[in-house]
Structure formats: C-alpha cells, structure tokens
Length: 318
Image (tube, rainbow, N blue to C red; front, side):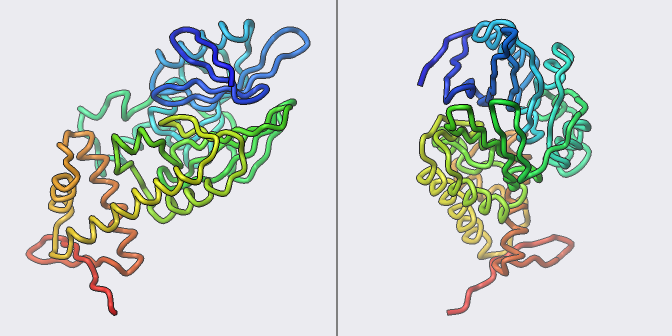
C-alpha cells in the first residue's frame, strides 16, 4: 500500500484511484485522471472545519497536480464529517451529496445541537464541534443506489444507528479492488479504547448496521475514526461487544428505579468517566436511546412517581 506525505497528511493508496487521508476524521478520495491531465476528485466527508478541508484540498493538489473537485459525498451530517463542506463548495463549486435525512441536518445544522441537547441548545454548544457551517446539498443519494463515475463505481450502503440516515460507500476502482468507507457505522479499536460508549440514536439499527458491515466484501475497510483494516469481522464483533456490554450495565444500574440523570451519573461513575458538558449531552442522549431500545425489547419499563419519570429493569422469567 503506497503512502504519500503531503501537507502534513498521510495519503494512503488503497487501490487504483482510491485513497484515504488518515486523520481525526478519515477522508476518502476517489481520483481519476482524464486525458487532458486534469484529475477529477470525489471526497468522502471533509472533516471537522474549513481549515481541515483546506489542508485536504492542498494535499490533493500536491498528490495529483491539477484537480477538479466534482463532489463531496457525506456519510452523515455530524459536524466532524461535514465541517469543511461549505469551504470546499465555495472554493471549487463542487456538488454536495447526502442522504435525505442527513441533507436536512447539513442544511440546518442547528438541528444537530438541538438533537444532542434535547432542547434549544446552550450557547456553549454553538461551537464547530456541534455546529457545522450551513451548506446546501445538491444531490440526494439513497441506500442501495449505485453510481458509476467512469473508472470508479460506487454503491451506497444504508448504515443507520449512529445517525438516522447514514450511508457507507463501497468503492471499486478499475483494478476491481474494493474499499468500504464505513462512516461511523463501526468504530476503530483506538476509538473504542477512548470512548467505549459511542454516540447512538437507534440501538437496534446500530447493531443491524454492524452486522451488515460484517458481511461486506471488500479489500479494505475504513471507519471514519480509527485505523485501516483489511478484514472486518473482529472489529465488528468488538463493536457488538461494546453495545451489549452497555446494555447490560444499564440493566444492572436500573435494577432499582432511577431517573435518567441518576442513570447517567451511575453509568459515568461505573465507566470512570468525568462528565463535561459535551459528554453530559452525548452520553446522556445515547443512554436515552438505550432506554428506548430496552423498553421496546421488554427489558425495561418507565413509570411516574412523585412527578419523576423513573426507569427500572424488567425481571426476566426463568
């Protein structure tokens, strides 16, 4: 696997025409050289902000010479994935592609912060980490859709769970080698080591998406956060273990009735997490998603007492 060092980035070649910038948010690149000498570029996500996108753009110029960015393909609309969209679109005039639900969030980024917080967000949340610059989406893409870019073929794989309408991108170059850009449908080992409880909006869908990723046939797998993998089964199993262990910890904590905030404190204490505002929001929201999942599964129930909403695990028979 060839590596190119440019603009303090490592550009790694995965197959003919397919590359990845490995960084805080891994950015995919589909590149095809035209007879004119111009290289057409399709980016998969643009990272956390305009500065990151600018570095990616400059690194592509260093690596490929004269370039034309044709489109940015958004796996999903969280700010650390689309923070550079507005800059790259203004700079190059490229299109922005996203799924239907993620289009709404990209065009109205306030929805993300409100979703995380569960209400009109605090002013401290109005920061790039939660709030990407607004950017119009030019093309809606769908799970199962296939697109030919010429020498490179793309297939969009539905991966809901971490966000409502996330898409993975299965890319095939002219040498027929395939790279699967999995977005946040699965997390790398280094990411799980730091954050054993990743953000989830729909636990059932997240588990199903992990299983779907485990069945994808590809030569390389690229989670948005973490390393690069040439096989995915062990990482998929680790992500499932993380999810199931969090389910069981929650069930253990709510053997005695707890409010949602009491659950959050007990969960953070048990996980040795020191809560800050961002973690209070993201982990708190994720725990509420777990409670919904456990409730639907018949493993937890809620009730009201003294004007408090309480959650309690349902005792299993047998």
